[in-house]
Length: 65
Image 1 (cartoon, rainbow, N blue to C red):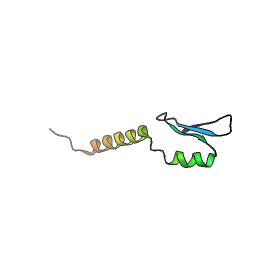
Image 2 (cartoon, rainbow, N blue to C red):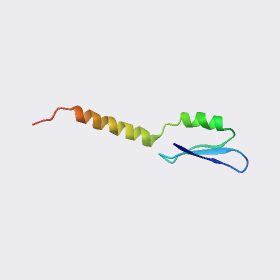
Image 3 (cartoon, helix red, strand yellow):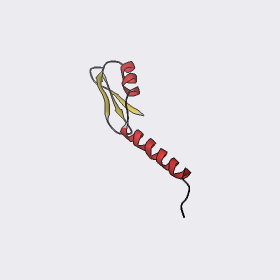
Image 4 (cartoon, helix red, strand yellow):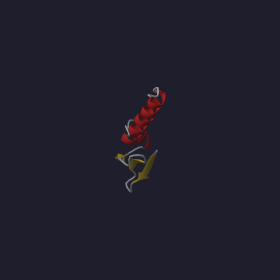
């Protein structure tokens, strides 16, 4: 999810709502924003995915006595 704003000069900014990083600033077209957002590697989402995988792997481990 991203927050897009338009500047007074007609350009756009985009911010990731998960990690709050600015993905793009002063971009001229919304199509270019789409491309930049598609290439964003959100560290918050990556960490959440790794933690979910770790929890899933832990659930499949046999219990020890």
